[in-house]
Length: 174
Image (cartoon, rainbow, N blue to C red; front, top):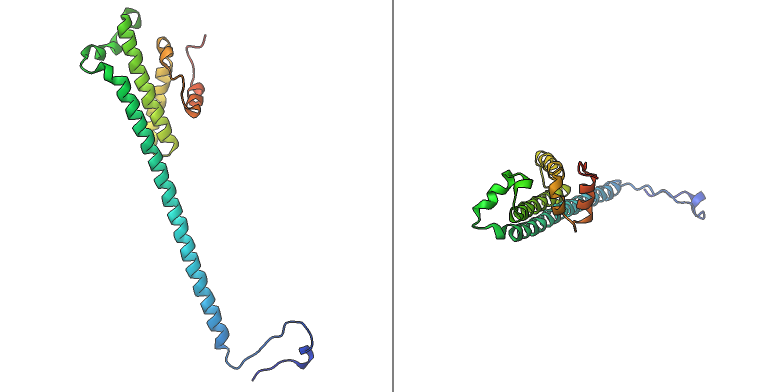
């Protein structure tokens, strides 16, 4: 039995239809819920894929930084291949070293700064453990406190890494 109020027949107000078969409304409602759940599932999948892509990008950037650090390390360390005396320079007093030994010690220092810069970027990407980063901070403070090796600090460092170096205490400030 369909009922439509005669009073509202000419009126533009919404009219409530009442049908004998009310399962039609339940079926539409169920379809709507199913569509909503399906759309939420698709949306959740897209969010998951987006997060995975972000993580993959971060890992790829870290791998690129690592590869660049390895290339710089090769450039810095290649002159020392086959020269066992280089291993001794870190144990000698600066004042007792020859010019060649000072240069070798400086090149080793550049290598260490290169390693630290790589750790800095890996840490900023979230790819370095907290323990390793704490060790790197101690290492950085120790390297910066070696006043006789300040000439071998990174000159053209990335701005973020340069700001990090500036934030470290400088025991050699004049």
